[in-house]
Length: 221
Image 1 (tube, rainbow, N blue to C red):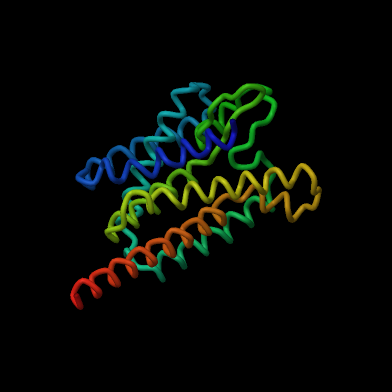
Image 2: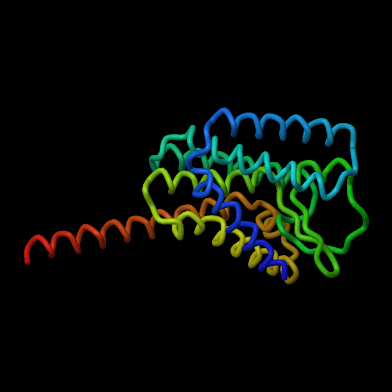
């Protein structure tokens, strides 16, 4: 159930850039700006307005992710370096802090009125699915990156799907391996999203190569 929920969320986020391809920067900026303002106030004051907090977090992550995907050059090297930097920061912040792994289902002991404004939370039988707004934003930005490169929709959903699946596998390993390193790796989702992004790039390269070969043989015939 946890994995299925994570995959649905990842695919949903990756779908939005295609649906909002004609959305203007002003509209996206307004949505992300208002969402961020509400998130900051809610997190500081600790307003327990769940599930409204989920709507705000999702709106900011989707609009902000599209803007980020449009702001970064649609080229491999700059985007890859950006992801590497975020992966290192994600690993470091998880190592220095404590908290639930991205997307785990843990026994519910009540909502934290501060943390609900920085996470997207879905209640599940016996626990909940939890993922940070930065992860949602990045999944959306990756999808926008592939859309701008002219790749098909199926390539755009690969980073989120692969990333969430890898994180789930690592989360299962934690239950049998008490190593602090493994536990930290299981909680840092961005490195897995980066791996998924690389897989999507390879798939996109294979697709382009196949198209070029087909065009070449058609020209020879």
